[in-house]
Image 1 (cartoon, rainbow, N blue to C red):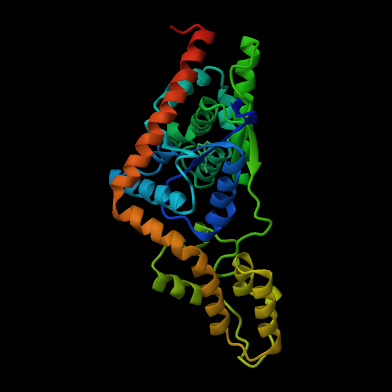
Image 2 (cartoon, rainbow, N blue to C red):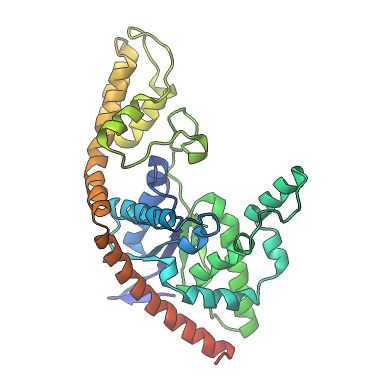
Length: 339
Ligand code: TRP
């Protein structure tokens, strides 16, 4: 749904952030930064998907801590809560009502086809277990809850990773079913925007940076630890005096993401001329990264040191989000004959 700002129509960008704790460099460059850039052009609504997290995180302290970490990280990365509506999903219980409404229009077969659910079923079959072993209804209906998140706020675009493609197709499918049943556009059909950094962010071992490979560079660890992690990047066993190839180097590929063209040329020349040890290259990488990250790290640390700031930001965001959601639900109830 478009809103008029001055004489400019601004569309809505919305995304859900799973509370998985402190993000790593790959998350920052691949998801956080692009979503914050979108927020400059769109009316952004970004939330922490804590209802979704409940499917796997059953420890209340852990859920709360992970939520704080991810909220502090996004704020430290530059999310301005005055521009971006930033809230906790669980502060908007209208999400439940919309979930229930859309469930009536969602075929069971559609849910059977969801990748995440299918992967569990397949693993169960391979391991000779009951098909439904370990499958809770939260996992099974995950795409419905996600559709409710999106449709409740009339999102036009949803910045997500490629792994969420199917969820977005299902959301559009459900919305279309409802719109065509009532013969009018009750729900905005969202479009996925897939992040691409142009470059895959490589992890410590040169594979794609991912928690599942245990090769990540966490964004906001203390500086000393950060240096230690940079020093643990895997390099080859070439001696100091040998000429080195920057094009096939884990250190250089990360350097590229942070250094200016000029800095890149200078370091590449040091690689080629020989006489440069890996310690020197890693030192140069640490310097460029730390220059960008350290001001953000300070913000992160100060937010984490006093959670009342985070509580206040999320509370304000939650109240505003709830207002918008309540209006949408009131509109839908009227249109579909409830109450
Ligand atoms: N499923 C998303 C993920 O795994 C998180 C999410 C929940 C989401 N609700 C959403 C993303 C709504 C976009 C829109 O990353």
